[in-house]
Image (cartoon, rainbow, N blue to C red; front, side, top):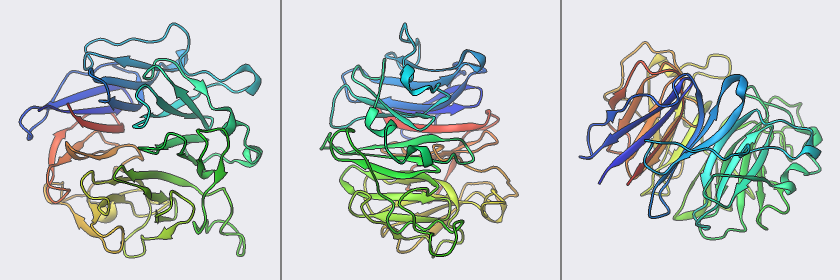
Length: 358
Protein backbone atom coordinates (compact mmCIF):
# COMPACT_ATOMS: atom_id res chain seq x y z
CA UNK A 1 0.00 0.00 0.00
CA UNK A 2 1.31 3.44 -0.98
CA UNK A 3 -0.11 6.72 0.26
CA UNK A 4 0.31 9.65 -2.11
CA UNK A 5 0.09 13.24 -0.95
CA UNK A 6 -0.20 16.02 -3.55
CA UNK A 7 0.70 19.53 -2.38
CA UNK A 8 -0.08 22.44 -4.68
CA UNK A 9 1.81 25.64 -3.88
CA UNK A 10 2.28 29.14 -5.20
CA UNK A 11 5.45 27.91 -6.93
CA UNK A 12 5.08 24.30 -7.94
CA UNK A 13 3.61 20.89 -7.14
CA UNK A 14 5.19 18.64 -4.52
CA UNK A 15 4.39 14.93 -4.25
CA UNK A 16 5.09 12.96 -1.07
CA UNK A 17 4.81 9.19 -0.71
CA UNK A 18 4.61 6.77 2.18
CA UNK A 19 4.88 3.02 1.76
CA UNK A 20 4.78 2.08 5.43
CA UNK A 21 1.77 4.02 6.63
CA UNK A 22 4.09 6.35 8.51
CA UNK A 23 6.68 8.84 7.30
CA UNK A 24 6.36 10.59 3.95
CA UNK A 25 9.22 11.29 1.58
CA UNK A 26 8.82 14.57 -0.32
CA UNK A 27 9.97 14.44 -3.94
CA UNK A 28 11.57 17.29 -5.93
CA UNK A 29 9.26 20.03 -7.11
CA UNK A 30 7.30 19.71 -10.34
CA UNK A 31 6.13 22.78 -12.29
CA UNK A 32 8.69 24.91 -10.48
CA UNK A 33 7.65 28.60 -10.29
CA UNK A 34 4.12 27.77 -11.58
CA UNK A 35 1.14 28.18 -9.24
CA UNK A 36 -0.92 25.03 -8.62
CA UNK A 37 -4.37 26.16 -7.53
CA UNK A 38 -6.10 22.76 -7.65
CA UNK A 39 -5.11 19.11 -7.63
CA UNK A 40 -6.98 15.81 -7.79
CA UNK A 41 -5.92 12.19 -7.46
CA UNK A 42 -8.31 10.10 -9.55
CA UNK A 43 -8.15 6.46 -8.46
CA UNK A 44 -11.30 5.28 -10.25
CA UNK A 45 -9.62 3.49 -13.16
CA UNK A 46 -6.98 0.79 -13.38
CA UNK A 47 -4.36 3.53 -13.72
CA UNK A 48 -4.44 6.44 -11.24
CA UNK A 49 -4.51 9.86 -12.84
CA UNK A 50 -3.18 13.06 -11.29
CA UNK A 51 -4.80 16.33 -12.35
CA UNK A 52 -3.36 19.79 -11.75
CA UNK A 53 -4.96 23.17 -12.32
CA UNK A 54 -1.97 25.32 -13.11
CA UNK A 55 -1.33 29.00 -13.79
CA UNK A 56 1.42 29.79 -16.23
CA UNK A 57 1.66 33.43 -15.25
CA UNK A 58 1.19 35.58 -18.35
CA UNK A 59 0.54 32.40 -20.41
CA UNK A 60 -2.64 31.85 -18.40
CA UNK A 61 -4.33 28.96 -16.59
CA UNK A 62 -4.67 25.38 -17.80
CA UNK A 63 -5.20 21.78 -16.64
CA UNK A 64 -2.60 19.04 -17.05
CA UNK A 65 -2.70 15.34 -16.22
CA UNK A 66 -0.31 12.51 -15.46
CA UNK A 67 -0.93 8.77 -15.77
CA UNK A 68 2.44 7.74 -14.29
CA UNK A 69 2.12 9.31 -10.84
CA UNK A 70 3.71 12.59 -11.80
CA UNK A 71 6.72 11.46 -13.81
CA UNK A 72 5.37 12.94 -17.06
CA UNK A 73 2.52 15.34 -17.78
CA UNK A 74 0.21 16.00 -20.71
CA UNK A 75 -1.99 18.88 -21.79
CA UNK A 76 -4.76 19.06 -24.38
CA UNK A 77 -3.78 20.57 -27.72
CA UNK A 78 -6.42 23.29 -27.28
CA UNK A 79 -7.17 25.15 -24.04
CA UNK A 80 -8.87 22.47 -21.92
CA UNK A 81 -11.02 24.91 -19.93
CA UNK A 82 -12.26 27.84 -21.99
CA UNK A 83 -15.35 30.02 -21.86
CA UNK A 84 -17.57 30.08 -24.94
CA UNK A 85 -17.24 33.29 -26.92
CA UNK A 86 -20.84 34.23 -26.16
CA UNK A 87 -20.03 34.70 -22.45
CA UNK A 88 -17.48 37.43 -23.02
CA UNK A 89 -15.52 35.89 -20.15
CA UNK A 90 -11.91 34.74 -19.88
CA UNK A 91 -10.66 32.01 -17.58
CA UNK A 92 -8.83 33.44 -14.58
CA UNK A 93 -8.22 30.26 -12.58
CA UNK A 94 -9.26 26.63 -12.11
CA UNK A 95 -10.13 26.45 -8.42
CA UNK A 96 -11.34 22.87 -8.18
CA UNK A 97 -10.91 19.52 -9.95
CA UNK A 98 -13.34 16.87 -8.76
CA UNK A 99 -13.76 13.35 -10.22
CA UNK A 100 -17.37 12.16 -10.22
CA UNK A 101 -17.79 8.94 -8.22
CA UNK A 102 -21.00 8.04 -10.11
CA UNK A 103 -19.61 8.49 -13.66
CA UNK A 104 -16.32 6.72 -14.45
CA UNK A 105 -14.83 9.23 -16.91
CA UNK A 106 -16.40 12.46 -15.66
CA UNK A 107 -14.37 15.17 -13.91
CA UNK A 108 -15.83 18.50 -12.81
CA UNK A 109 -13.88 21.76 -12.79
CA UNK A 110 -14.81 24.86 -10.82
CA UNK A 111 -13.53 28.05 -12.38
CA UNK A 112 -13.22 31.80 -11.98
CA UNK A 113 -15.30 33.77 -12.90
CA UNK A 114 -17.77 31.44 -11.16
CA UNK A 115 -18.56 28.69 -13.64
CA UNK A 116 -18.75 24.91 -13.74
CA UNK A 117 -17.12 22.80 -16.44
CA UNK A 118 -17.61 19.09 -17.19
CA UNK A 119 -15.09 16.66 -18.67
CA UNK A 120 -16.02 13.26 -20.08
CA UNK A 121 -12.45 12.14 -20.84
CA UNK A 122 -11.05 11.96 -17.27
CA UNK A 123 -10.12 15.59 -17.13
CA UNK A 124 -8.36 16.21 -20.43
CA UNK A 125 -10.94 18.58 -22.00
CA UNK A 126 -13.98 20.38 -20.57
CA UNK A 127 -17.29 21.94 -21.61
CA UNK A 128 -19.01 24.73 -19.72
CA UNK A 129 -22.27 23.91 -17.94
CA UNK A 130 -24.64 26.43 -19.50
CA UNK A 131 -27.39 26.08 -16.90
CA UNK A 132 -25.30 27.58 -14.11
CA UNK A 133 -23.71 30.29 -16.23
CA UNK A 134 -27.14 31.41 -17.45
CA UNK A 135 -28.75 31.39 -14.00
CA UNK A 136 -31.06 34.43 -13.70
CA UNK A 137 -29.39 35.57 -10.48
CA UNK A 138 -25.91 35.80 -12.02
CA UNK A 139 -26.02 39.56 -12.71
CA UNK A 140 -26.31 40.05 -8.94
CA UNK A 141 -23.41 37.77 -7.95
CA UNK A 142 -20.61 39.50 -6.08
CA UNK A 143 -16.96 38.49 -5.81
CA UNK A 144 -15.42 37.56 -2.47
CA UNK A 145 -11.94 38.54 -1.35
CA UNK A 146 -10.43 35.80 -3.51
CA UNK A 147 -12.47 36.70 -6.55
CA UNK A 148 -15.71 35.37 -8.05
CA UNK A 149 -14.56 31.80 -7.65
CA UNK A 150 -16.43 28.50 -7.87
CA UNK A 151 -14.23 26.66 -5.40
CA UNK A 152 -16.26 23.58 -4.40
CA UNK A 153 -17.96 20.86 -6.45
CA UNK A 154 -19.99 18.15 -4.66
CA UNK A 155 -21.12 15.40 -7.04
CA UNK A 156 -23.53 12.89 -5.50
CA UNK A 157 -21.74 9.52 -5.13
CA UNK A 158 -24.59 7.44 -6.57
CA UNK A 159 -26.93 9.82 -8.41
CA UNK A 160 -25.20 11.60 -11.31
CA UNK A 161 -28.18 13.94 -11.72
CA UNK A 162 -27.51 15.58 -8.36
CA UNK A 163 -24.63 17.98 -7.88
CA UNK A 164 -23.85 20.90 -5.60
CA UNK A 165 -21.45 23.80 -6.03
CA UNK A 166 -20.27 26.67 -3.85
CA UNK A 167 -18.91 30.02 -4.94
CA UNK A 168 -17.67 33.10 -3.12
CA UNK A 169 -19.43 35.31 -2.37
CA UNK A 170 -22.48 33.73 -3.99
CA UNK A 171 -23.46 30.74 -1.85
CA UNK A 172 -24.40 27.10 -2.36
CA UNK A 173 -26.37 26.02 -5.44
CA UNK A 174 -27.70 22.55 -6.28
CA UNK A 175 -28.95 20.79 -9.38
CA UNK A 176 -31.12 17.67 -9.58
CA UNK A 177 -31.03 17.29 -13.36
CA UNK A 178 -27.31 16.91 -14.15
CA UNK A 179 -26.71 20.66 -14.30
CA UNK A 180 -29.52 21.71 -16.63
CA UNK A 181 -31.16 23.84 -13.93
CA UNK A 182 -29.96 25.15 -10.56
CA UNK A 183 -31.44 26.64 -7.44
CA UNK A 184 -29.85 28.56 -4.56
CA UNK A 185 -29.76 26.42 -1.40
CA UNK A 186 -28.75 28.69 1.48
CA UNK A 187 -31.74 28.52 3.82
CA UNK A 188 -30.84 29.54 7.41
CA UNK A 189 -27.29 30.65 6.53
CA UNK A 190 -26.89 34.09 8.08
CA UNK A 191 -25.09 36.94 6.36
CA UNK A 192 -24.56 39.40 9.25
CA UNK A 193 -22.97 42.00 7.01
CA UNK A 194 -26.43 42.72 5.55
CA UNK A 195 -29.00 45.03 7.20
CA UNK A 196 -31.37 43.68 9.85
CA UNK A 197 -34.30 41.91 8.24
CA UNK A 198 -32.23 40.99 5.18
CA UNK A 199 -29.59 38.73 6.75
CA UNK A 200 -30.95 35.45 5.36
CA UNK A 201 -30.91 36.08 1.60
CA UNK A 202 -31.69 33.48 -1.04
CA UNK A 203 -28.09 33.87 -2.25
CA UNK A 204 -25.14 36.14 -1.56
CA UNK A 205 -23.60 34.20 1.34
CA UNK A 206 -19.81 34.01 1.46
CA UNK A 207 -19.30 30.25 1.57
CA UNK A 208 -15.66 29.26 2.12
CA UNK A 209 -15.88 25.47 1.68
CA UNK A 210 -18.33 22.54 1.66
CA UNK A 211 -17.57 18.88 2.46
CA UNK A 212 -19.53 15.65 2.05
CA UNK A 213 -19.18 12.07 3.27
CA UNK A 214 -19.80 9.46 0.53
CA UNK A 215 -21.56 7.06 2.89
CA UNK A 216 -24.03 9.77 3.94
CA UNK A 217 -24.36 11.86 0.76
CA UNK A 218 -27.29 13.97 1.99
CA UNK A 219 -25.11 15.23 4.87
CA UNK A 220 -23.09 18.31 4.00
CA UNK A 221 -20.86 20.48 6.17
CA UNK A 222 -20.17 24.13 5.33
CA UNK A 223 -17.58 26.61 6.53
CA UNK A 224 -19.02 30.07 6.04
CA UNK A 225 -17.41 33.47 6.42
CA UNK A 226 -19.55 33.84 9.56
CA UNK A 227 -20.19 30.34 10.91
CA UNK A 228 -20.10 26.58 10.48
CA UNK A 229 -23.21 24.75 9.26
CA UNK A 230 -24.60 21.28 8.60
CA UNK A 231 -27.25 20.15 6.14
CA UNK A 232 -28.99 16.78 6.30
CA UNK A 233 -30.89 17.23 3.02
CA UNK A 234 -28.17 18.08 0.47
CA UNK A 235 -28.41 21.79 1.09
CA UNK A 236 -32.16 22.33 1.18
CA UNK A 237 -31.74 23.70 4.71
CA UNK A 238 -28.85 24.35 7.07
CA UNK A 239 -28.27 24.25 10.83
CA UNK A 240 -25.61 26.28 12.61
CA UNK A 241 -23.07 24.02 14.42
CA UNK A 242 -20.18 26.35 15.20
CA UNK A 243 -21.41 28.16 18.32
CA UNK A 244 -19.30 26.03 20.68
CA UNK A 245 -16.09 26.64 18.71
CA UNK A 246 -13.76 29.30 20.11
CA UNK A 247 -14.02 30.92 16.68
CA UNK A 248 -16.32 29.94 13.81
CA UNK A 249 -14.25 31.82 11.21
CA UNK A 250 -11.99 29.78 8.97
CA UNK A 251 -11.59 28.45 5.46
CA UNK A 252 -11.25 24.63 5.20
CA UNK A 253 -13.64 21.94 6.39
CA UNK A 254 -13.11 18.19 5.92
CA UNK A 255 -14.99 14.99 6.79
CA UNK A 256 -13.40 11.82 8.14
CA UNK A 257 -13.71 9.01 5.55
CA UNK A 258 -14.66 6.40 8.14
CA UNK A 259 -17.12 8.44 10.20
CA UNK A 260 -19.83 10.65 8.64
CA UNK A 261 -20.27 12.46 11.96
CA UNK A 262 -16.57 13.32 12.31
CA UNK A 263 -15.33 16.55 10.76
CA UNK A 264 -12.41 18.94 11.01
CA UNK A 265 -12.02 22.71 10.87
CA UNK A 266 -9.12 25.11 11.31
CA UNK A 267 -10.39 28.22 13.15
CA UNK A 268 -8.76 31.61 12.80
CA UNK A 269 -9.14 34.60 15.08
CA UNK A 270 -11.59 36.26 12.74
CA UNK A 271 -12.29 38.18 9.58
CA UNK A 272 -9.82 40.96 10.27
CA UNK A 273 -7.16 38.93 12.12
CA UNK A 274 -6.76 35.85 9.92
CA UNK A 275 -4.21 34.10 12.12
CA UNK A 276 -4.51 30.85 14.10
CA UNK A 277 -6.24 30.96 17.47
CA UNK A 278 -3.79 31.92 20.19
CA UNK A 279 -1.15 31.97 17.47
CA UNK A 280 -0.96 28.15 17.67
CA UNK A 281 -1.88 25.63 15.03
CA UNK A 282 -4.95 23.75 16.26
CA UNK A 283 -7.28 21.48 14.34
CA UNK A 284 -10.72 21.21 15.89
CA UNK A 285 -12.61 17.93 15.52
CA UNK A 286 -16.23 17.02 16.13
CA UNK A 287 -17.31 13.39 16.52
CA UNK A 288 -21.03 14.15 16.73
CA UNK A 289 -21.79 16.09 13.54
CA UNK A 290 -20.89 19.44 15.07
CA UNK A 291 -22.68 19.24 18.42
CA UNK A 292 -19.38 19.41 20.33
CA UNK A 293 -15.78 20.20 19.38
CA UNK A 294 -12.31 19.51 20.73
CA UNK A 295 -9.02 21.10 19.66
CA UNK A 296 -5.92 19.03 18.91
CA UNK A 297 -2.38 20.33 18.64
CA UNK A 298 -0.03 17.54 19.86
CA UNK A 299 2.98 17.51 17.59
CA UNK A 300 2.24 20.96 16.17
CA UNK A 301 4.39 24.02 16.96
CA UNK A 302 3.60 25.61 20.29
CA UNK A 303 3.80 29.03 18.69
CA UNK A 304 3.76 31.76 18.02
CA UNK A 305 2.60 31.08 14.46
CA UNK A 306 0.79 33.48 12.17
CA UNK A 307 0.11 31.61 8.92
CA UNK A 308 -3.42 30.56 7.99
CA UNK A 309 -4.70 27.48 6.15
CA UNK A 310 -6.55 28.07 2.89
CA UNK A 311 -9.88 26.50 1.90
CA UNK A 312 -8.40 23.61 -0.12
CA UNK A 313 -5.29 23.11 1.99
CA UNK A 314 -6.86 20.53 4.32
CA UNK A 315 -7.73 16.96 3.34
CA UNK A 316 -9.10 13.92 5.17
CA UNK A 317 -9.05 10.46 3.61
CA UNK A 318 -7.90 6.86 4.01
CA UNK A 319 -4.29 8.06 4.07
CA UNK A 320 -4.92 10.34 7.07
CA UNK A 321 -5.66 13.98 7.80
CA UNK A 322 -3.38 16.65 6.32
CA UNK A 323 -3.08 20.42 6.18
CA UNK A 324 -0.66 22.89 4.66
CA UNK A 325 0.01 26.45 5.77
CA UNK A 326 0.68 29.71 4.02
CA UNK A 327 4.25 29.68 5.32
CA UNK A 328 4.98 26.39 3.56
CA UNK A 329 4.62 23.75 6.24
CA UNK A 330 2.62 20.52 5.83
CA UNK A 331 1.43 18.34 8.70
CA UNK A 332 -0.24 14.94 8.79
CA UNK A 333 -2.10 12.82 11.30
CA UNK A 334 -2.70 9.07 11.22
CA UNK A 335 -4.97 9.04 14.30
CA UNK A 336 -7.85 11.31 13.29
CA UNK A 337 -6.06 14.51 14.26
CA UNK A 338 -5.12 13.65 17.83
CA UNK A 339 -1.38 13.80 17.10
CA UNK A 340 0.48 15.40 14.22
CA UNK A 341 3.85 15.13 12.50
CA UNK A 342 5.70 17.46 10.19
CA UNK A 343 5.84 16.25 6.58
CA UNK A 344 7.40 19.24 4.82
CA UNK A 345 8.68 22.70 5.63
CA UNK A 346 10.07 25.70 3.75
CA UNK A 347 7.74 25.10 0.80
CA UNK A 348 6.10 28.00 -1.01
CA UNK A 349 2.65 29.14 0.11
CA UNK A 350 0.46 25.98 0.21
CA UNK A 351 -2.71 26.39 -1.85
CA UNK A 352 -4.19 22.87 -1.93
CA UNK A 353 -3.62 19.41 -0.46
CA UNK A 354 -5.03 16.05 -1.59
CA UNK A 355 -4.17 12.51 -0.47
CA UNK A 356 -5.05 8.99 -1.63
CA UNK A 357 -4.12 5.38 -1.01
CA UNK A 358 -2.97 3.68 -4.22
